[in-house]
Image (tube, rainbow, N blue to C red; front, side):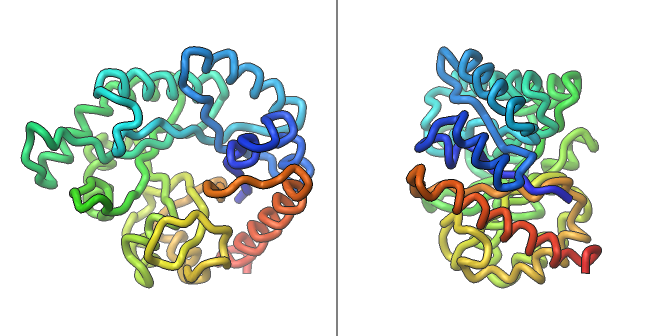
Length: 275
């Protein structure tokens, strides 16, 4: 298993070229990267791709925008941005496009698990079809309840139902932090219940009560149990760190990246097959 990093955590403060150099120097070879999906996203993506090549980095996964918080406006515009993220994944050679299967028309429909399942299947079926043709796997991510409004894929049974509805064409991106918020100390049981569907990851930690995106071991997650359960939950190829909050000054970015890589090596050493 390899280690990956969401490069935009660093590039937002030190730029893409420097972030690529720092991550490569720390030992990383795989990235989570999605270009900003504005009118110039293709130009930005091309520039970033050149940096990745220069530093020996490969984009392993991209992330489609999610509209839970209405950042992407009307449904039609959101779908266009999701389609653009697939185009980016294809152009970058990414293996996975991570998607939140939590869309729903709360204004005109009554939320029920079956209704949410069908709504998200219909919503993302065109994307899955195009992704298959492009050689990209759509990976539905586990999320967590918030805003006092139901959220599809917060429960593993709903996530598995959506994945299975596509008949093997999609998989799961397991977000360890989201799982810890949803399931607390039983996060490992939720991971195991995915029954082999997990193929990619978002790795971060918290205190089991909020989505904090901490470096592993900085929170309260039981990583030994989580990684043991992963042998039952799936076969991801990359443990991909997803850090979000804060902004690292240039002077310490390299030190921080090397520390995260060391944490990743520790996690890999804890995998049952590596003990």
